[in-house]
Length: 227
Image (cartoon, rainbow, N blue to C red):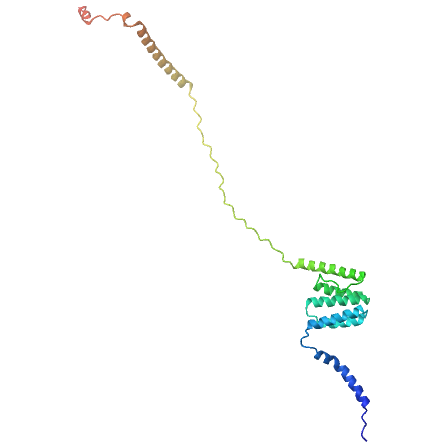
């Protein structure tokens, strides 16, 4: 007896098979012109729509898919900040702070993608300060320390010390003995007296003249007087 084929059973199996193959077929049928950036943007926008509708869990799932195709630093930072925002609204503050830290580490000047509650804003700015402080400290440590170049002083020319002049011994003047001094004085006095006498005689001859002198007798008379 041949087994009868149940059409309803075949229909159930076809539905199950289609459910398994549909996601793969959807990805396979993605247009070639759609790049990863377009796929990322599509998933981010879908997550944003669900977030505005307060569908936080579904929004988080789409953000997880967007994270898988994020290829640039800006995309990675954006999806991390969006995930932190959704996690904060779900009450998972610790995980939200970690996502904020990841996004701000990639882009310290980044902002939250949408407006958030004041408490979430404070947590976000607090994490920003921590990241900036950490990066500033790391930059200071990584900065190369300039080693000062040692200055080599050139040796100065040696100046010879001034030679001390030996004091030349000046011979002390020998004092003349008293007898020698007296003899010199007497000689000088006698010479002076002679000179004075000669001068006086010349003066008298000039004043008196030769008239007052006695006449010298003639030589003939003197000869006649001889016997």
